[in-house]
Amino acid sequence: MTHVIRPIRPDEWRAVKELRLAALRDPVAHLAFLETYDEAAAKSDAYWRERTAGAAEGVTERQQFIAERVDGGWDGSVTVLVEEAGSKDPFGDVVEQDQGHVVGVFVRPGQRGRGVTEALFAAALEWSWEVADVERVRLFVHERNARAEAFYRKVGFVPTGVMVPVPGEPDAREVEFAVKRP
Image (cartoon, rainbow, N blue to C red; front, side, top):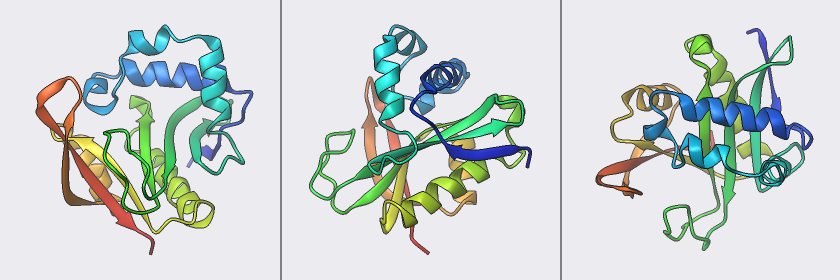
């Protein structure tokens, strides 16, 4: 592995923004993200500073991990949000138990299949079990995103049977996958 997997730092908002915009340019971004490149690009620097500070090292409500090359460039990212029982999730449903929710998964195309995504997920799950102290971590995958679904199964996530409509796509569904603390 040629990357260091670590949480982002509050002052790294420019790199957070660049990686997010790169993710939104991916050919399957429309299946993986609930925002477009144009929407993200139009956001202010203040937004990116706040977003970065809210998911940086030491924050316990959410954590964004990145895969950093030896030259300092970033090749991937994953974020875990902590959802508390009784709160509303991004789809408007009530969360039944304290849990982690993986979002924003992206690895640059040239790094896929090299262990980067696995390393990001290992860090995200370790943080979920040890820092967030949750018993379950979930994620949602678009029903037509077979590549992502295959990866999630590979790292231990299983479908739960929960499906939610995709905002803006009335005939499409997001499928929930989850993994429990070992």
